[in-house]
Image 1 (cartoon, rainbow, N blue to C red):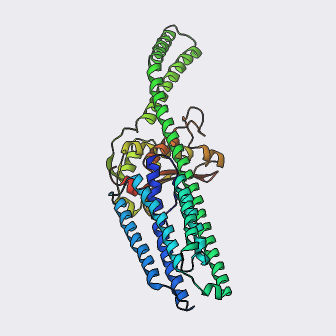
Image 2 (tube, rainbow, N blue to C red; image 1 turned 90 degrees about the vertical axis):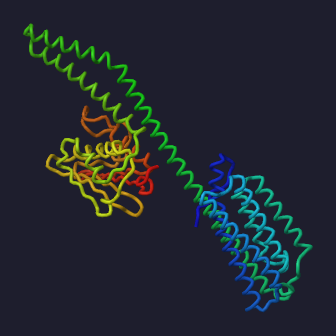
Length: 439
């Protein structure tokens, strides 16, 4: 079953998506209604031997079947890219729901009018209109249902059995009210769940956009800082070098020489940090998508790393034949940051596992170590910018944050699992449909 998307006022794109999904739902619901009506008519006409105008009832059911076949055809055209505008889709949906109210009126007029217990299904139509349509259409749908009920008071075909057999009428009322209650409850529950899912997706999308904006802001900040600090850092480095040389010539105390060297080393460290921030934060956004297989991606990831001999690569058979169209250097650097963290967390003699496998319609890249691990709070914050569990000066806390940003730009997800004393596993999931063809 498709999800409901309530049709509320908003942007055209959102309305179009809601109208398409709701139209699909209506098609399923109308097939169920046709089946239920046909079974009810057959049960009343045969086992209960109640005389009904079967010919006219068959005509009404035929109209419902033909109209739903037409809707299904239009929906397929829309899926194939030959669909209608948002306004047209909305008009179709309004027409279908109002038409169904009129068809229900005709069925009831042929089978006793308001006295027919199944007139309770007008309430279901009103609820559907209130949830799926815009406010003014919902009011018009409720007004139409009221008018139909009034008309049935005057125009209907009597069904004497309802008066002659109170027990049968009571059973029919219980059945009709029970069905109406179940359908309404199911309908509203589906709407509520879909609303929650949609709100969660919107919140997740806003969070991803916020992270992307932070990455871009970080790149801009790093580039600006590198540009503004380049000259004063160079001046400090030159002065510190001259000072060190003069102290050597004057046979100054060793402590003074060490202070001069420390100034030069710290200046060089500042330059490296600025260069790394600029490189890591700013290089991925405009990279070209290139074809690369999994083995090539893993080789690119570890080729320039110290300790690469400790990285054990495992490729599942189905993953070896996968060719990716991705920003290769950007994705390799994202994986490199994860592998580097795993190596730093492991003892010098321990290996880090880097594996690729295909699970359903996703490519999984799993990087696992048997190092010190992290507690629950640290694992939760590990992907936040500038958060690190390393010693001061050993890292900026940007590796996992930028890695997750790169993965999410490819439509994937980065998940981290860790336990103190047992190590850490980072799982990167990429949708094959997205990363195996040029976008």
